[in-house]
Structure formats: C-alpha cells, structure tokens
Length: 157
Image 1: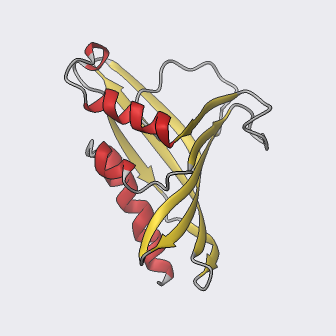
Image 2: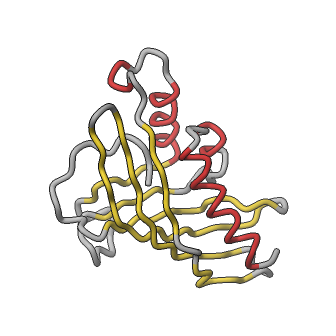
C-alpha cells in the first residue's frame, strides 16, 4: 500500500457517487462504519449533539435502496451530483496497522430538475485495509456553512 493507493481510493469513491453506482459504493463500507455530517463546524460529538446526518450501515443501505428503487417517486427524475475535489491529504498512513485517514476539500453540486445546490466541504475518511482492499471505516463531512438552512440533500457529498 502506498499513498497514491489511498488518494486513488478517494477519487474512486467520488466517481462512484457521481455515476450513481450506489450499491458498489455501499460495498466500500465496513459493517460498523458511520457517515457523519455535523451540524456545528467544530462539533466533536455525533451522539450527544444534533447532527445533519449520522448514519450507520443499516441506514446507508436503506438510503441506497431508496436511491436505486423504481418506486421512489420523489426521485423521478433522479438527483445527480458532481464532486470537484482537491487532491486529498493523507494525514494518517500506518501500513502495519492498516489504518489511514485522509482530509479532502471539495465542492459538491447536487441537481434535480431546475434546482441546484452547491456545498463547500471537507471530507475526512477513516480507512482500513481488509484482505488487501481499502474499506471505509468512517466518513465525516464538514460543511463550511453547516449552520445555514438547507433544502434536502438527497445524495451523499
């Protein structure tokens, strides 16, 4: 495992989401992982403080089933997204333990019909190596303006 493998993984994850390959994306996640989007910019606790989103694997699977579902009428036509990401920083690189952490600044655009939403954010990925493959052990998405009023975010930054 080299740093470029970690960086390529982050780019690949964003591409999966942009291309609507949600089932493939969900397979990247560890069973005990959480996807967290804090409400406060410096929020440290997802359990005892309100978050915009804090989903475990079960909730992520439900989200993916809804996005893939033919009877999800709120997604007709389907939402689309586009990630414009800066080259990720690899902040933790422990090959022996198989633990890695990245920090990636990005702009996220989500669109459906005439509506378009632009979010500026930092994504922090906790990754682990399982059987020689990278998996997501956790993801924290910190919106620059997390305290603003938002419409529905249908997909995942």
